[in-house]
Image 1 (cartoon, rainbow, N blue to C red):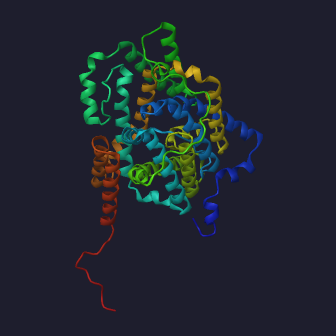
Image 2 (cartoon, one colour):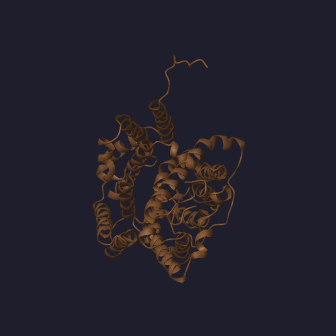
Image 3 (cartoon, rainbow, N blue to C red):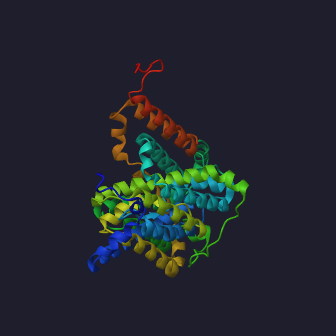
Length: 434
């Protein structure tokens, strides 16, 4: 970008809605409305499923989609970004809740929001270039594997003992030990949902097949009175309104204790939102404002935390759905949040009939798509061997160790490799006399 077209510091933080709204026409607003409704139908079951997989109450997923989704679109630096809870956070959120309770997660999300606001104000959006691509790909595939593993019991109706750890090395033996509890109706519903989602997506790419597949599976269970676990039976009725804002318990000791988790949440929110914005740029031939996007992610996570929601970020799949459905301005994301709110206010009791194997099947498909299997061959056959090894190392550490360790080790080794590839003089090199 030339100096003549470079944005001023103020413009870098200006929300896209302020530059796109004056250009809106009744036709473009209607297109955004249709796109917003379409994305809402995709986001509804996903938000519920992500919250459940994270170990939180289902309603927290809807609260996050409504509050954070609205703020990310209203304040963000992308024309078409759709924000909300995403699968990338499941592993982190589950771990924070297990170690510190849901109140600890709220505080960690609040802290992450503040970190992102500061990063946005410091124009740190461009720092994503420092994160090596093999690290991003490695931990994305690793997270996808953990999500699929976590949903396997619900998808096939296996009942695990209470307190079964979420770690892969301990969960896999527990699933195998409980294999005799497999429930055939649940397995049939889970498989049917996966097949329906894949089939509808291929036959009707613009159609919100996720909610249709889950709704049909749930309707079949109710119609034939199958003995399959439902959302209402496990969690009770969903609230039909948003909660009142509140602050978690804040002490210096808790701030220090939760700082590592907050940094990971902020890192994931920043990286995923900027990756999503870059994908969206290619789809609409646009250019997002990284610093404004990071600032919006910070405000959205603060807002979500104050409302008792989950961490949020830009969602690549929902953003792509928005573009394919005709969304071209941030109004589409705002409409998406409003539609979810209306559904929550008017149809919350109906969500209790959604069946757990269908929601688990939905997340398994989401995890598969999240891992981008179409790129696996390229990861393993092209580029430097050091990049391949870095991807595999990050993936293995993500699944078998800890996401924090995976990111820290991956980024450190990636930056070291990048420095090594430069023309750095050897240690015994001395400058010439002047």
